[in-house]
Length: 113
Image 1 (cartoon, helix red, strand yellow):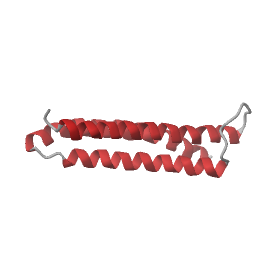
Image 2: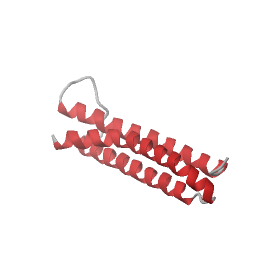
Image 3: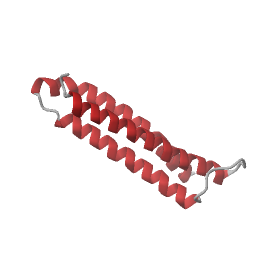
Image 4: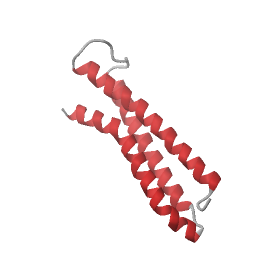
């Protein structure tokens, strides 16, 4: 039961962190624009990237602990756990790329452009 909760947390953390960081950057943009001070936006993006990467590492360690195989056609606890762990790695890697791409846009465009 504890492993299932941990795996579901690992697979859902990346999208939730991205959504929160996107909203926080959207809310902080007028403030950063009026003060011409962008490091607050960078801190939000960097924190989101670190948390998403941490969640991906957690999923990676769980995948290695369960067995370094991709899930097959069989049913049961172990293939389900492998599917969740490998899915967590893939989802978190994808959302880490999304966060990095948004950070690049913040750097290139600036706060008020």
